[in-house]
Amino acid sequence: MNQLLGDIMKIKRIILSLAVIFGLTSFGSVANAACGNITVANMNWASANFMAEVDKIILEEGYGCTVELVPGATMPTFTSMQEKGEPDVAPEFWANAAIVALNKAVDEGKMHSINKAPITGLGEGWWVLPATLEKHPELTTAAAILERPDLFPHPEDPSKGGFHICPPGWACELINKQHFKAWGMEEKGWAIVETGSAAGLDGSIAKAAERGENWFGYYWSPTSLVGKYNLQSVDMGEWGGKDNWDNCLVKPEQECGTPKKSSWVKSEVFTIATDNYKKTAGADGMSYLEKRTYPGPVMNSMLVWMGENQAEGADAAIEFLKTQEDVWTKWVSSDAAAKIKKAL
Image (tube, rainbow, N blue to C red; front, side):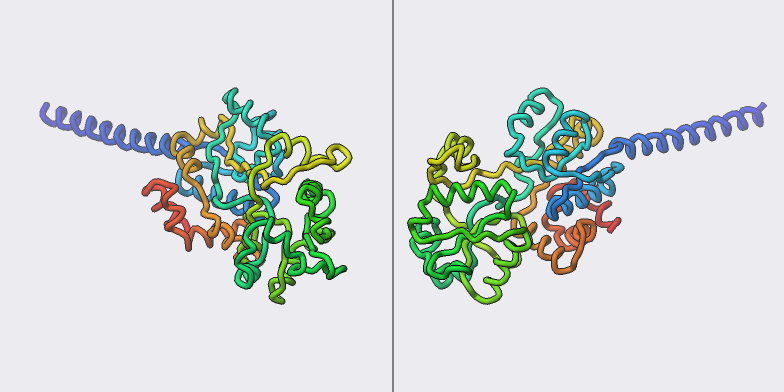
């Protein structure tokens, strides 16, 4: 009898041990499955490509998600997210062109503007090289620069100042031509420099920087050129109003021939996600994207690194995570940070 009782107790202990082991295993499976399948837009420009690759590593290694990167561009990605609910995340969405539709989708609960400042110091406008300000520290405003066309000779007519604008077909080409008229630049002795292409615009900056010459014109940040040559943004003065911008500065001259001076419109750049991301990634995934803000100088330095090393976003993501722990560890939990470091 005693032997029988002993055998029964032994069997109970085995069953209990198996139950505990099974329970822990099941719990582990549930924990690992807390974040499921996520799709992230891999946009067709360097900073967004880099951000998508960082998101992939952090969400997979830190939070157990399975992440697929899908090709994207601003409006096609937004339309797909709006109509099909995919991809789940657009890391760097320039929202000015779709702000009304985005706000409507957010109000309906289809999308979430998780982070309204994923990169600091970004935007469009007019820029000069730092060497120019070293020689002429008073030229920090558009008004001051436009009084000195002699310092920025046009490459084809040195008697005029050269104002470099976007290539044909870009929206900013049209806007800059309207700005040229609004500021009375022709009367002040300026002429537009038609750069012809993105490479032509970049080349004009690089040539001036390397020769120690002055350069003035349109550009935007974050970009490798802003980082490489430390371009300085020009103060364009006060905002000229929404009506002036929406109904004149962005219109062809034949639709509005009376543009008024204005600063450049504030760039609205968000990280946006579908409701599926919120449900799939949970509170941890939402918290990560909310906190994930790249300081402008850090972003520009990574873009310079990509250019100098002919690297893609995937390589830059590894470089960033290895060298910028003080930045990204603030975005994640200590447990996730430890997992990510171990995976690198």
